[in-house]
Length: 505
Image (cartoon, rainbow, N blue to C red):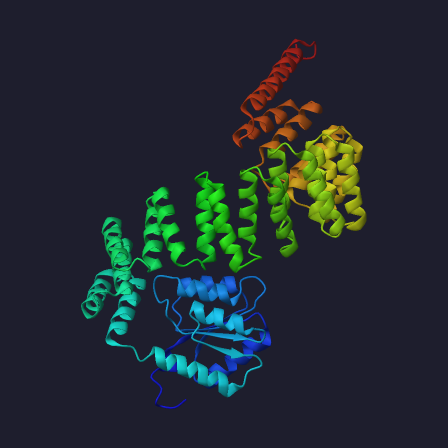
């Protein structure tokens, strides 16, 4: 690297974000040849955002298209944070259209490299953006020093540098914001709010003032004021997906689902497949009694995120709340027909049938799932629980034996123990319940069932201890005490019989 460079590569920390291993490794090799030593890699955009919030990085090289959280979101997260928002950020992509490159530039990307890239091209872009960054004005030097000191927790020194920045440029919004946030970090929220209001008066179009005010009001649990500030923030900068969703959720808590829908839609305009936004808007439509729209968005969740079972649960819950149980059934049947390989749809449909006391229909659906997936322990478990409910204990035992075989956990051993108890196979029941307790010794139900087993075989002392243990673990006080007293009664009665017998005398 030429000596004319204004940065020392060996002292800088780099973050590479790309879900394609060979590309990530190729970028790393180029950087190492440029003498960069502190290089962090991740294949996940969400992890990248977490890393950027936890550590100080000097440059980010990020893929634009990744499976979960894409480069746009990572870039947006960096540019919208309060401190060190201006670090160099280079987009690397092989698929970007001209519109996407323009969008990345609008969000604050410093440059981009097209894949497959030439080594010299990447070297030139990295060198260029870093040289530009490390030739700051006196104002930028003061601001960066101040922000670094805040991140180190050296608040008094930071305030001195922010004041220096304001001396150099009294109207600096970044300096005013930083000073306010420093007071907030010091626990002086009122001074922080006063400074932010003054800042906002000077420049009403700087959205970070309203963002900071909203966050302080949320910290102080002033949700109404927080909502007002976030509204102003997002009116200025609409392309903040996480903030749009956060405001929408606040509005739902504030019983304003119609307003929440507007903000969920703004988030989905930027990221049409965003799971949280799709789930939120579905719930918001349910809250304004538009069940069809709610179900439409829950279907979209399943289209883009096939493994997200909560979309099915939310659809069923909203239908039940609207007393439209048949719609829940039809929604799930439609899902099952379209995607017969998704086990969670069968399980959800079986639960709907159980809710409607259609136990045989539930067992039929679970049998259908077992034929498709013979080792699905959840299907066997639910089938066993339903058979216990309708007191078909032999059938329950058969199902739960397979549940335990494929997943020997506390819950499955507990249910099998309950099935054996109903089937009056007390020794087997005790064995399974003991296994359940070995996995989890905090289950009041397991101890209660052990009490019933011991009482059934006339071991009243052990039964009494189990009922008392169930009570200690949080079991139903009335049931536990009644059964414990009942066992004591049998113990006393037995003592009387023994003491009055000819052998005893």
